[in-house]
Every structure is written in structure tokens, then in C-alpha cells.
Image (cartoon, rainbow, N blue to C red; front, side, top):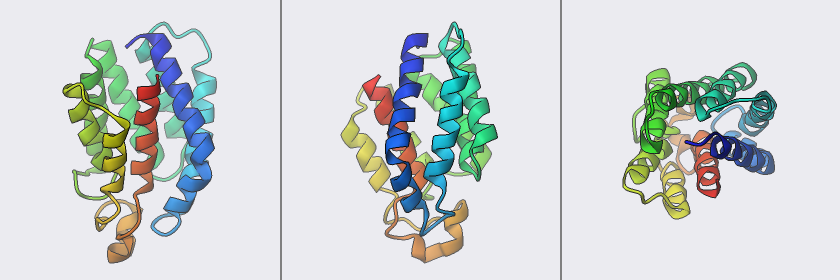
Length: 188
């Protein structure tokens, strides 16, 4: 990925998170701590500040994003997103294409969170996105469908799993923010 595209992607994601931070926290309220939006907005603000120096490659963009998210975003989201960007950085350094880079991010999320598809986590969005990118078929509609697929699932991982059956009827906030990430990618 070109460095300019990577920077634009992160800027678009930051703008989307900032615009929807209240909604993200509202999604998080019934099944989490209610702070996903504020935490992610703080982390992305730090990430944007960190990438404003002279990175020469997409990998050098993803590394400070990873570090900022790990250090600034509380709860599970910081380590999960941070791990994803670290995996993406390594795949980018290895010369992987976009699908390979995103798949490396997904694998790091799965490794860190021990989550699989169908457990009401961000994996439920990352997995179909990676598959769509492999086929050259990523669309906003596919992203929306993946995000909405978490609504009628019982959470079995993360903080939402504490509320069990009461998690049904709520979109997973990490899935929603992942949707914002991938819509920002399409925009970039």
C-alpha cells in the first residue's frame, strides 16, 4: 500500500470515529462500559499526531498507529486494534497485498482475543471484509451487513459476554468501529 493512501485511510478513520464517537459509546452502554467511542477517538487522535512525521512507507504508518491505540485506548479495543495494526505492519513489510495485510490484522485480533466468527466481536466484520477484499468485492453494503450481523448474536467473548442473552438486539461496538475503519479504507 502506498504511504499516502495509508495516511489518508487513517485520517478518514479518525474523522469517522470523531463524528460517531457518541454513537459508538451509546452502542457500548448496554453491553459494555459505555466508553468505546471516547476511548477510540482519543486513541485515533494520538495516532494521527504520531503519523504526522516523516514515515516513508505504509508499514511506518501502521506502527505508530498500533502503538498509539495500545497506549491510549482502554479496555480490550486498544490491544485488539493495536495488535491488528502491528500484524498489518509486518505483512506490509513482507510485501503482502491488501488482502494479505488485512488478513494479518485479522489473525492478530483472533490471536489476542481468542475470538472466532459468530461470537459477536470485531472478527465478525474483519473476516467477511478480508474475504471480500480477496475477491475484489468490498462494498459499503457488505460492511454494513457484517456489522448488522452482530445484532442478533449472543456475545460469548469480551465484556458483552457478561450480560449473556441480554446482548441480543445490540450491535457489537467493536464491530461498528471496524465498519468505520473499512468504510474509511474504501473512501481512501
